[in-house]
Length: 206
View 1 (tube, helix red, strand yellow):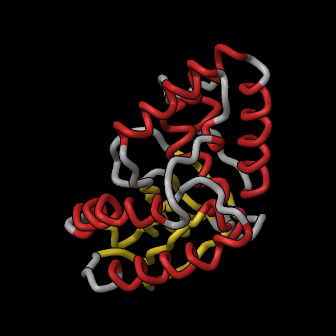
View 2: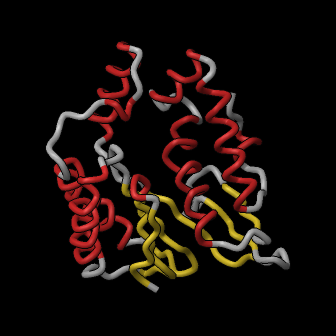
């Protein structure tokens, strides 16, 4: 249901977000495809880990007369951003730190029991994000060794949507995480945190 050609199509930020929401709607209507998406089979891994967050990020950061061109592969960036004149403005690298083994087990459990992923909560308020700190910092250390001088690095922070009364704890945790990340030296144009459950983008460098 998702093809390489689908992903590698040049779109405005709004068009990219519309592509994502439309594709998610179609996938959710088909149990087989929904389960493939939850388990991140095939191109669904790229779609979930990179294209969905890319669409959220671009919608908040770039004007709608810019064009976004996602690229599959290991070329050192995940998307090319072009300005209103069609010239390359910058490159974007998306990184989504997570516990892959735990996420896979949770997805398998959700598929087996026919429930949504975000309904599974087995932690105290804020502890899920705290538990991710070491994974996030380890990924940042690896990124700090690479050359992203013409690239904006987007670090995706994702967790189960908090209840309204929990949000303050999560915002504080994000601030603590930000302080630790900016202590590191990166060869990068800009660094952003994309905090999906809080609908927030924070530029922390550049």
